[in-house]
Amino acid sequence: MSAPERFLDADGTQIGAIPADLLDPETLVETHHALVLARRFDMQAGVLARQGRLVVYPSALGQEACQVGAVLALEPEDWFFPTYRDSMAMVVRGIDPVEVLTPQRGDRHCGHDPYEHRTAPPCTPLATQLPHAVGLAMAARSRGDRLAVLAFCGDGASSEGDFHEALNFAAVYQAPVVFLVQNNQYAISVPFREQTRAASLAAKADGYGMPGRRIDGNDVLMVRHAVGEALAAARAGAGPALIEAVTYRMGPHTTADDPSRYRDPEEERLWAARDPLARFGAFLRERGTLTEIVEKAAEADAEALADDLRARLEQEPVFDPADLFEHVYAEPTQRLRAQAAYLRAQMDAEHAAAEAAAEGARR
Image 1 (tube, rainbow, N blue to C red):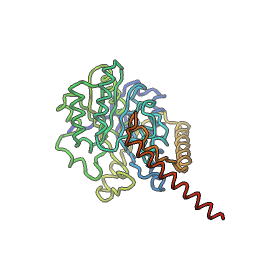
Image 2 (image 1 turned 60 degrees about the vertical axis):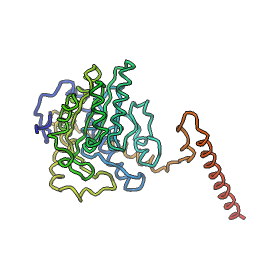
Image 3 (image 1 turned 180 degrees about the horizontal axis):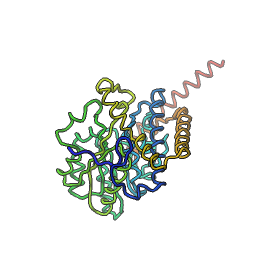
Image 4 (image 1 turned 45 degrees about the horizontal axis):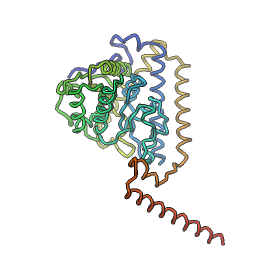
């Protein structure tokens, strides 16, 4: 198996020629700023879950380069299909962090307007969003819209039937969609070596008839470059592509998980030395781009984001059970109307009983 493509070594040393557009100082600072915000958001969300403010939170600690680099490669008109672990990517896409975390608060709504942000609701079942991404890409092409679709998934999703169906369908019809697999080495507790006999996930692209690329998912510049090239090719009519970004999930599967039961501490130390944020920071310091002023500004913005997130999530969400019946059908069926009326009558009765009890207590 060949080594993943990279521009930067684990310590931030440049080992390959980097395209000039990626080395623009503003681009470098923007990328670093997004990495810092993404990590701070992720850590704060984990704390909020442990405090009971969220039902659960699936951390992407260690996968910042995959999520930030890929999303920054999108054009405004492109569409993005995330998974449940891609909250950081959604924040970088410009979605309100509180809206991003809405599903983790028990709301049946995804939290954001998919059309406003051109971002599909985050998908929890593995790989089921991939056929949807292909369908949207094909619809856009039929309408003559010059856009591409970026669909995220994890290595565990590559074992699902939806993964095969989506990639095969996309290749046959040359849909403008890029599949980015964040190979974080584990499908919950199942290590990657037990998931496939293929040399790599990128190698599977040959079987579908599309380009495949295996990159270092902890090198944010390589992720942004590789995804950007694939998206540009898709917009130009070259069809789909599969990119395997080799990375590592440094935290648990979710806040309900204990990775010490299935992971070797030595493996964790090995990947900690490849930290994507530390790697990129070292590269920028060597170039003189990451000054103390730039670094402190990013940290201040990250803390402001965390402060705002804590303050707003301290407010308990207000749910109206009657909303369950909204948006099910354009025209509610007779049975649905009857169910809604029954629920409303029950709620009115409970409210009246509570008021009567309160009035009795006052007397």
